Amino acid sequence: MNNKSVKITALTMLFVLCLSNAYGQSIDFSVKVATGISAITADLKVEIVEGALTLNADQQWAVVGACTNTPSITIEIVEGAFALNADIKVEIVTGALAIYADKTICIHGANELDIDTLRKLKLVE
Image (cartoon, rainbow, N blue to C red; front, side, top):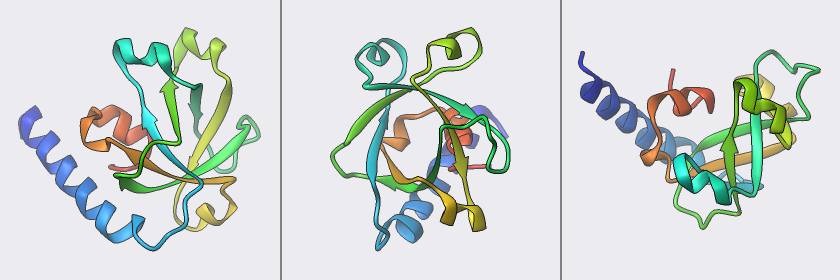
């Protein structure tokens, strides 16, 4: 499968997730993920940490899918050396752990994100 096919498949799955998950669920924030030069204007720098309810996280977020809501907040995902500048460390929780999430969010403009970012947000595998 070439890169373009993977992106089309991922976007199709994301659309299905949006239809099946985001509707009817209450969300705390509609989040826009800023990348590239637009990250300069991000409201919050977020480091995504891994682990089951890790003690390294400041908050746990459940991502319910994509949405078209007006973004409540714009974030920049930072990692590596840039993570030292993170405003908050967030663990993305799914499945049964989602009930423990501090915030339930949807992703505005998810179709504009690359596959790696979608994986970090656990929107695709």
